[in-house]
Length: 209
Image (tube, rainbow, N blue to C red; front, side, top):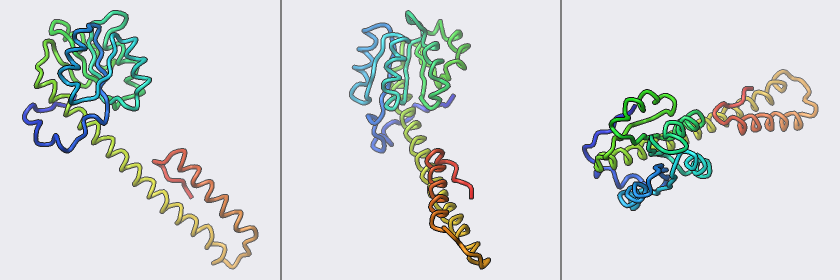
């Protein structure tokens, strides 16, 4: 579980767009949902659900937008951990925060591995601490996404270099050997097509020669 220090939230605020991704807030009490939106609706983009069943539907509809889930533990139909456990395997990068009463914290911690829970927030909330947690969580998610995108671009560039090298070897080898290259254009085209098809299917792994 990563830890965030509640020290300062002002020094880096300008560096991040906290509306770029959404927070899914799940609680069966309408007043709590209104309270959360009133506290953080101006700072963050918020989606809501009233229980784990609805939360799963909302999440699957907006999975590309959501980076944080804050969910209550005790809810009708399905617990918070029950909901989180259904998406933990397919969406490990989503930051999952469980909000629970202090009396339920031991049971919730015992189920942590099921839902891939990132942090616990006990009720009543420490509002400044919760805001710091949400900001730092979104910053962490944003930086990780940018890093993954950069890594993907580097791997794509490496794949392009490798493809060019293999293509050069494919063309030059028979020429250096003094062999006749019948239908060379068709062979080269097939080689290039195979390489790009492999890269498009798995961009992190450049095609082999």
